[in-house]
Image (cartoon, rainbow, N blue to C red; front, side, top):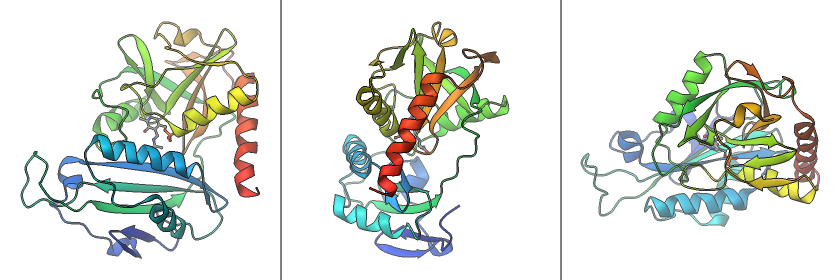
Amino acid sequence: MAAENDIVYLNGRFLPLEEARISVLDRGFLFGDGVYEVIPAYGGRLFRLDEHLSRLESSLDQVRIRPPLIHQEWQTILNRLLPDDRDRSVYLQVARGVAEKRDHAMPAKSTPTVFAMSSELDPPYDVHAGVGAITLDDTRWKLCQIKAITLLANILLRQEALDRNCAEAILIRDGVVSEGAASNVFAVIDDVLVTPPKSHDLLPGITRDLVLELAHANAIEAREETISAEALPFADEIWLTSSTREILPVVELNGKCVGDGAAGPVWRRMYGIYQAYKQLLRSP
Ligand code: PDD
């Protein structure tokens, strides 16, 4: 759902959602040829905006779309999509734009289609209760570091988890955990917080980086290391991180308890640290 006033941004204009129109020849529509970001806003302030915009720049660069806007312009636009100080998530998307005819090859010239909207951010889960997850084979492509709008594999994987009454699919590639269908994965193994190192197999999550930063700042031992599929079920804790779900404990994996089947002590500590960090943004 977009903001109450349903005002969205499309190609230089702010307009009501129902008036926002794009061409059916837009390559975002025809090919999923574009990239996106999801940025949380707390108390009307965008969270980790610089980090999100640099990841956007990196995604754009890797798919060869020239950045349509500079940092300051993004900031101005996105702030206008925050009508009040309620917590929201801002979605922005840059597609390659309209080409004269449908052809896989990139058009010599095209103007990117730039779209942004905001929606209310209310976690659909009782975070303290935790969620269930299943492991699935990572069927996605080999450029998972790009935040591409082409998400069909992620959609199928997430849906399979939902169909099995789980909140997320934890993906396994070549015997190791890559990430969730729409989240990064952390595990507490032998008292150490572990998350897979950055690679082309996972999105460099902004929440992931912040959790590592907060762990280091608060003397929680944390490492970027591979997590084998065999080791995962024996972890004391498993967490999922993302901009919209923050840090979510997984209490059941493939129908079996993780640890003692409740959100663990390291999660409780990190969750508190994370909430305090967010609060700083609301009232610096
Ligand atoms: N997804 N990995 C994948 C595949 C994701 O789709 C996401 C987030 C993350 C976490 O990244 P971050 O911490 O920067 O949100 C990891 C967003 C929220 C989405 O697609 O809606």
